[in-house]
Image (cartoon, rainbow, N blue to C red; front, top):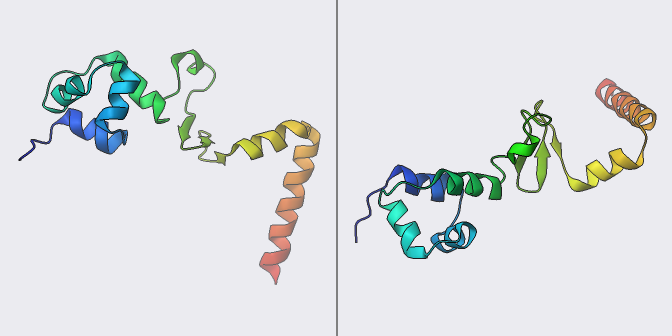
Length: 118
């Protein structure tokens, strides 16, 4: 069986990494409908958006104003500067105050300096 590789198939499989079954469950459609999308039928915009949000390629629109440039990758939140933040790292930042965080950063910078001098 020869499959025509369509933009929809590339989007679903390669960009989002979703199987037809996962996509169908996520979008509340049948696997047959997903197969039709793979063959070239237009994917509804809302389904594309849900697929991107499910795999962390897009944050929900309620966050756009405050989280512009932020994105998800697996279990990490990525800042606009490219810093990966795990759940544990966010909990550490929250448990320390802003002042304590500055002290931790300064200590880390001093450690890097001392190891680079050796």
